[in-house]
Image (cartoon, rainbow, N blue to C red; front, side, top):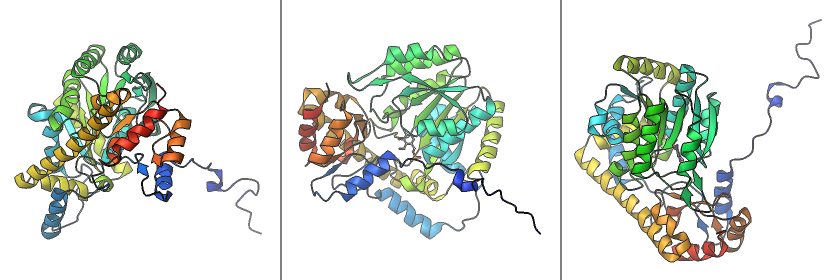
Length: 402
Ligand code: PMP
């Protein structure tokens, strides 16, 4: 008789899994959708919304897609680095013309900012499994999982206090003294998510100097370039730290500033100590990418490449980006002007800010006003419209913790 191949008491493979909690933000989106109140306000979801409440495809993107349909001749493999022309076009936008010529910086296309962050974390782990990443708190909730999945230890340091509405700069710098040479510091290039609170240029200079003196490696997450104060202004901090540091990483995303979220469009740039070192890094990036996605999806990068290579489309994209940025700034100004306790919002950047609200207050706003925001008090400024911004402000100031 054939021997039984399974042991009856042992659970089968997938029965060993524990259930994972549903993503809180996705749950919030579903709740907001199911709310029948016509005047509900969804400031939970993290995408740009126009005055009509939609997230339309940019004109320049549509035009580029038409060109691609007409002219693209093959879908054959491109390789693990993705669309290299796309990477070359993104380079000066991130690093400026001078920085873009630095041969110590190499880049590859990735599936969005998430892919870039994960690839960077894997590269760090491969280079030195003892290296740690220092991350200011609070931060985007996916930073921890992306870093830790790659096996890199994350060290939390203070960054922002919601109640006093200020960056805890001295506290952060003090905590960073724990970092050893070769450790990394994660920095939001602009439009800090979830707080909207960005370092001033003087603070960036101080961080850059500290990093350089201590042999630390900046790891910049640049997911919202152009949505804070414009493409150039939003890159200043990134350029300062990358120039000052001997080695650095920049995880870049086009998903927000080109509005191509689901196309998963981004890149990872790495600065090594020398041109030869950069070539070694590049080879390692290709090998790591090969084991995860082999090659990044092409369509988003092809769109961006087509836009940036065409002066007219590029100018139109610039105009549309400026429009998005101006709309965010104008909503921030409206909220700030409403009440002194909301004045901090205009000093912050990008789509998000955090309100000092208790969890109960967030729930009450949901139930009695149909206002949907994350339990942390993070809200998407641009989820508001000219019509409901005052109603939103009136409801939240009632409930502020301080
Ligand atoms: N970094 C931050 C701070 C983000 O908010 C996001 C997206 N929400 C990303 C990275 C990832 O962007 P992508 O959608 O391009 O993966």
